[in-house]
Length: 506
Image 1 (cartoon, rainbow, N blue to C red):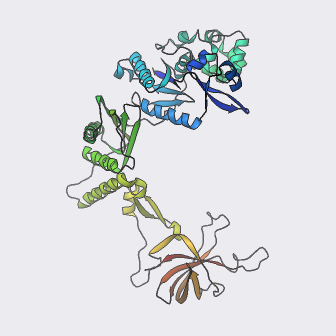
Image 2: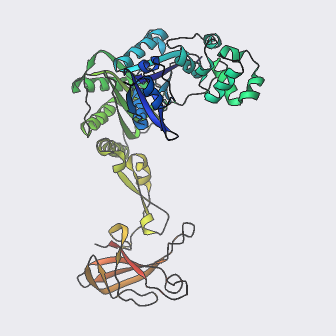
Image 3: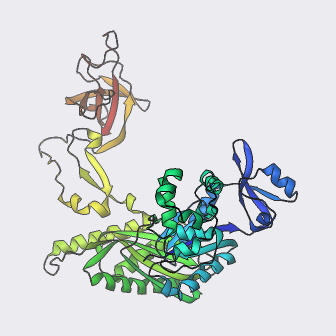
């Protein structure tokens, strides 16, 4: 049976409200306990609230900042369970199934979490139940409640129907029908409730009563392997952090080795005593089966951080997880030097990627196309090293000049051509980057047509030329379009061609 923890969060300001615009009027978006004791409530217009309490502190709502704060708190809650889901706008779901015993039981876990958040300045209401909907319902009206498995219906029967959070229209309709408590609604047959208030509310009620449950959506996928270390006294020195990661790496490798797996993506999370969480991730090109490799990659990553790892008052927990693993394929490594070379190259790529980022270390793969700018694909080396080593490139004829330039521009650069031989001749001179180049030798044209399945009406046929100017510089230029069919206006008259330089030969 799954156990769910639900918590609602707020700030301890006395008395204060947060207002937001609704239908061109400022209404209360959130309020603290002191404001609630004065009779204020969410949805009340600001003018009415000021009339009831002239000394009220008013703050403008910042939805983005609230979401960021809630996300930060969710990161901090990862110390209790890896399955944390958002319950907007102010709540969180924690699936604590199988985790409560690590903290002394459900009551101790709830008390620990609430007190820790209270020390950070938050007002917290929380409850534990067998279904997420029941836990949320209890949080609104009976915080601190812990419901045993199967006791959901009894626990919420006396609560008002507003605790279900079904919306103002449904809540008002239930009260007008004389159904003031959840127990009153549960006493009616399900088909009556469905016919009057809809299937969605009927499902919500069933989940609150413990009859099935809606699955939560954790913010992060559950890692394949997790190891962590908690400290009675927070650690803050680089030496202790490195030693902790090294020991966790040994434990993680031992766990994966039992199932013949290696890690491809690793994440180290550092939980500070003030609630701040820092996470560092590294990826590898091949499954890692040695703790020394993990230790070295994280050392490289920590040394290269633009924002250094600030321990503050210290870290009270460090977690190492493998979010992506693969089965390790055994290879003959004693006699095959080629395998050793591949291992060294993959290790070098992993180290460089840990320092500057995996997207910056690339390999080039040939593509089955004649379009020059699409003929090569730059792909992350960590994930495509094997494909790059097996790729087959067109062989160059020894007695012939190269067909493609040594330097190919990312985008062709326009050039000015005063005149050229029609219909498919090369220019006699051209201007590129404000410099005039006189053409003395020409090879071409090489006609390249755009793929018909990728044409969007703007891609024209290209005629490429390998040319050399009077100073010995060699260019790769092309005319965009054909004179007889593509370079004509709506009246069928020819229009000037656009010329581009696409690369430079050695």
